[in-house]
Image 1 (cartoon, rainbow, N blue to C red):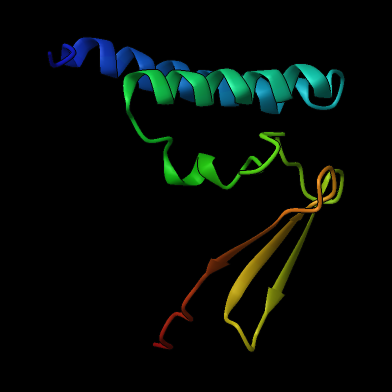
Image 2 (image 1 turned 90 degrees about the horizontal axis):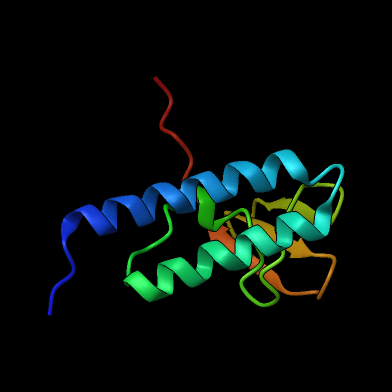
Length: 105
């Protein structure tokens, strides 16, 4: 049975709100922000919706910790691979996100 679109919309809003709260709380309570990410992932799984692309890059895919550059993750760019490489300093997991250069005007 298909879920009503209103439920899916509310779930997506809740995921976005949880990531906003995780960003606010990270400086004072990092464990709370990690919990918010796990809750957002659980909601996305339960309602079978995808987490928006810009938010997917803000947490580790292995340990589900909220990532804040230079605090608990390392961000590097590789010209040879044309990718942004994010390393989680909590568990050591490496995530690669390819990019393409913009064409000059």
